[in-house]
Length: 160
Image (tube, rainbow, N blue to C red):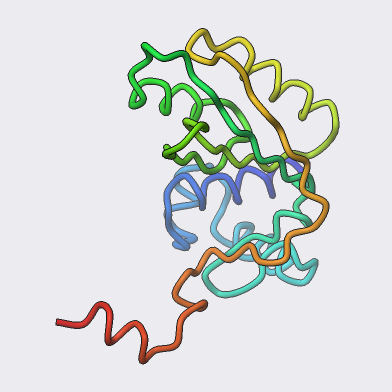
């Protein structure tokens, strides 16, 4: 994988589209090159399906870290949550009840980036402390929550 592949993948995610025309326009990479590279990324297993979902392990973001974030009492959770979400590598942030104020999930390429991530959390003046957990393996990491339900359950709970 090279810089063009990364530009294409980042553009797909930023634009939230699978349109090769839109990716070509955003990156300046010819449409035929975008098609060719997407096919190569599929063959390598980086792209998993027609929705262009990424296998983050194959991409190189193999390290998953869960971070419990405890903020200072006087902090506005909306502002704190935005600051946490802005930390590079953080892919999900949840405002929670209980002792923990936020849970953040980060996907990272290497141990140096883990060190940087923790430093970035410590640099936030809203944060009083963190507790980080290194994930050994992901038993379930679905981008598609409806896959975890029976259709009948969804119809009963959600249909009007």
